[in-house]
Image (cartoon, rainbow, N blue to C red; front, side):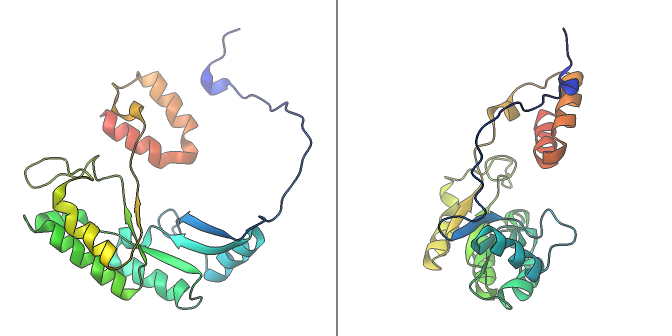
Length: 206
């Protein structure tokens, strides 16, 4: 029998003994959280705290505020950290296109952005996958994570004692020739829950 992938809807037949755990044995830190990036209307601190308490989560690292923009970072700090200090940790982000437009001194501009966001309350730095994937300097060269020009950024993070989150290592398939249109339609249907992944995949294929 031939079944198209988009028509394949398997039913889980696994039968095993269940041991449901409502809370972890040890306190948990949510170290990869997104409050603002994927939500047009982010939850209130109280809503988030209620769910955290149910799951045994004691701290929450918000990775996207500084990446979206400094004004969003300040808003998130006001809404969350000021009301519940020590519970919410917010990440700084660097506006790389603005830095690169400044010319050869772009790493110093990036370091200044990092210091400014640390001053308003950011505690960690989030580096997104555009470095090494799409971000280019004024000469059109891809900027890689090990580019020595980025030393001021890493040194500033170290001086400020800010841990650095780095999103790298995309799947090899992102860089392979495009599949046919039928396969892309199927991928789109099955990636609806992860539309960012599909958009990026399609962008690179194009």
